[in-house]
Image (cartoon, rainbow, N blue to C red; front, side):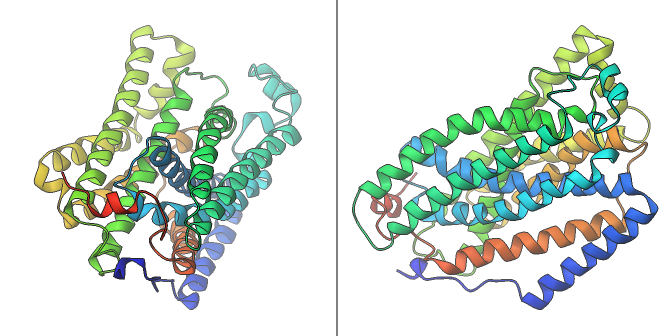
Length: 386
């Protein structure tokens, strides 16, 4: 089966180094001119890469817990996305050095006490200790899941599949608790005066959408180059399209629900979040965010033929991934900058991060066969029909 072969798609090391060097230059120049702008970009891009890795883990966990057979031939793509987790961990922990430009709790004691934050919980060492703990916890689960999957390449013992299901069950419970706390620490506290009971669910929905979009894009690219020709057909692409349509709509539902609840109550401590984002300068991005993350993908993916078209799926996935970056940018930037700034500095840093992600994912895909050879659902996957 040609789809089982390893794939050679690693980014040239010279190109990766060049992209990384461009990012380092941009960071060095930006820190000297506008530190808040650079640390904002580092938080946005770091959380984006982290969401990519966690999205891959969630995709794997959901497929195993639901007993889905159709996705057995593409799970290695989601597993490869987990390889970006160590990269994302370094990116996020580096924010320790720019905490003063981002977070109120990193200021002197009187400042964050007047903002209503508990000084003990948001003491700088405790916050970054929690960050390190959450990242380490997720990396442990990623390693366990990847190791159990690797064993299936050499052994047909069903215990390896049962372990994957067990790890997935534990992971989703741990993730629900840890990610809720992490999203508050890393994003919500950018504005210490604002609170939302739907915030963690909103950020989670974005992670889920980003994971499905990334898996869809990589699977389509591999399929177009013949690497998964014997494993993935139009029926599998149709299911990926349905997932992308469903989860972008789920994100839009949470987005609209949070907005309407705050608009209706019109409490000053809540409405301020949206007053800033719908004010001068930010309003166009606020509107575009909803368009690229839901309305355009919804209209494009609604017809059945679109969900079975590799070309359409590819470009919708690219659009959604761009939209995910914009959504995170709008969560972060209005609290750290007076006006939007998306220029050469942001582009250079994003390119550098993209190069690292490309290298990590492609290297992970090269190390193992593209399809788990003894997955108990593989036969049903190959026979999958709509």
